[in-house]
Length: 81
Image (cartoon, rainbow, N blue to C red; front, top):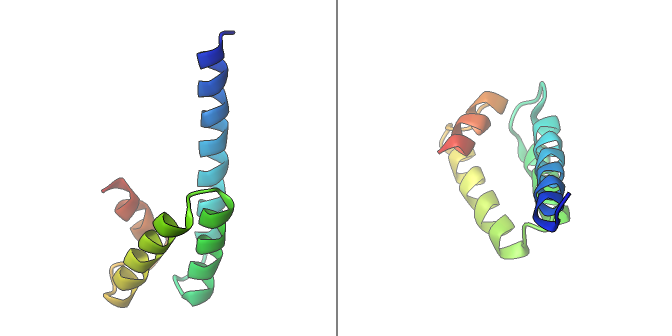
């Protein structure tokens, strides 16, 4: 296996782990501040970066206030955009 194949495999594992953690936060839960704080922690621990995490969380909190985020399905739909 070449260098780029190993790198690609490693990145896929990292992505899958990140997605699993994010999805676990929303399983059978409503979107509230506790949920948002857990998501923020996952983003920071996943090395998304503080600036990017702040921007993501601000956007999610705004959408939650507007009623656009109600459950895990709405979060997944937003992620697709």
